Length: 234
Image (cartoon, rainbow, N blue to C red; front, side, top):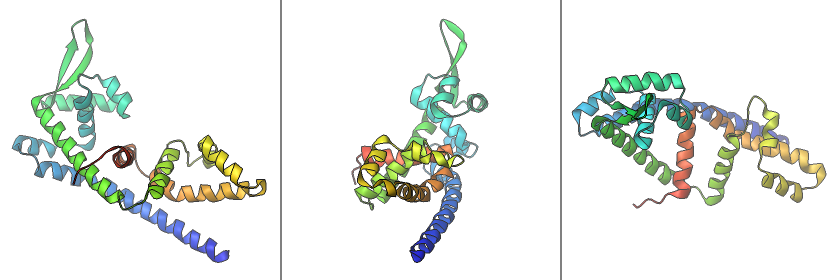
């Protein structure tokens, strides 16, 4: 029993250290993605613009490209970007002639955004880059079996409803079906111990996920959607 506790403590330590390494790597991937877009752009004007584009600028452009015409409030709500950031970024994109402003005929106060032909090129290039990432992620995750993928999916779902500051809410955040199954399968005297064990096991993965920013959590979500709902041909 003591050896098991020591081994578990060591594994948790290793997982936390790995989580930090993953966090650093994901941050460095922003530059890698930009380099991919620069190298794969057939238009030298786009390639040059990419050197000045930030990740947030690409995400705002992505939102406009997907839902155009779209206003700033909708971009902020649907994509979790602050209104102030959306306002600053759209001004920069307009200045660079990547997007343009459009007004409704009956409402001159509401500003809508559309992509220009240059903006459409960058948008399509950005989409192609993410498609490349999705294919790579899909092939990487194929090495895991269904039970392992299901565990990861459940961990990510619970992470969305868990506070690591108020960690005592972890049990309450679990799906009702999960609580019922565990209650039915175990005697009352084992409930507390089982709950603690499950919580610790979930923490080993969710602590890593908690270190990711909203952009990288969206990446994780995209990976899961890619694995369970998309089919790729070799």
